[in-house]
Length: 457
Image (cartoon, rainbow, N blue to C red; front, side):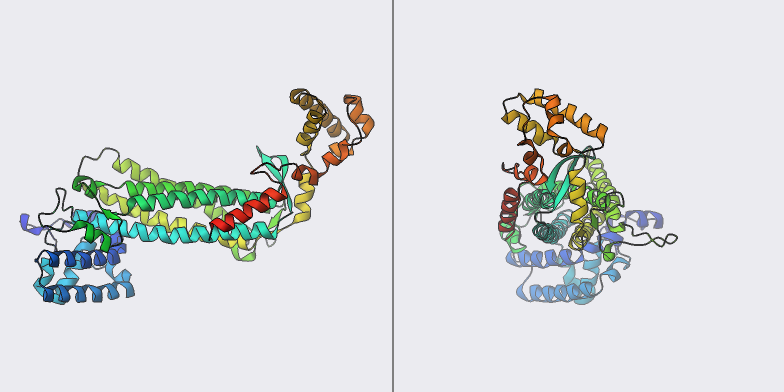
């Protein structure tokens, strides 16, 4: 039975019913709806709408229903009711009869769903924060395992300067820490309870909303009933957090797909996150990483759709807002799955240190060190930059690296060069020189690992 049928002389058209009903997706709020209903029953008892026996009977029935929906949530989805609130009320009527109809006193589906959804979002955010922490830990563990492994750093996908492979790992730890920070902030902002706001004007019963909010684990109660029932900023924020984090995961995937390629050969992914070709027996495809990269667009789509839905809605609740759920219900599990899959990929990586070192030595990646050598000799950087560019041309013409040039060749470009140039061009010296905070020297990367481990506790 619909919760609003008294105003209408006939029932809804079947096509409209299918178009309107949200139970096929908002069944996922079943646990939260029941938990919120238990809290509301307590509030009604405090204002004498329910006596002690009625309260006890309702709570017992709600807890029994909670066990049932936990055991078989899919059965809720196909129960045929308009929405999760209709389902819970109908199931409660089956258990305690007309007493169940008293539970909705002073409450609207508008403040009810706003509360349910915040509870779901808060629970989901906590799961994702745990997953991010685990992924960070995997990156830190890989950085420790590969401490000292040298990798070519890139700009414009051209070899630029050598870095430690651990420095690359710690770059993604920085991104994940920002993801954690954003999600924690969003979780804190959403943690205010709309229950007791009614349809839009507030409830007519003297409910202690602050106590009600705290009983549900919220920081406090919302302060404006119009805003409380129509606010979906928390959905937008979660989708924004998801989208930014998926950018990071997608960039990581792209890096590793390239590092895993035959052209680079820097790493090998584990068999557990790769697949083969149905035609080519030799193939080992980085499917897990490609799917992370591909699913990023799916999360972006949910974020964009949510903003378009909200952009011109008047206060307070509008049925458009039913569109807030399906995108988030898809995006959040997708984000969580991608975090878990990224962790599996990182955990199983085998780094080919010989290949990364050989690649880092190529491409004249020590050219900046040579320019800095000239600066130390008193030559302005811009002039030194030009001198080194000339030497790079010379080395390319001869098919050599800069360190393979003879001292006479160096001096033919500028007389200031001495034999002390060669230690500067060694790749270990290039790494060691980056001693400033945030640099790729062994000392700085070791410090970054220690800092990250300390902050992760």
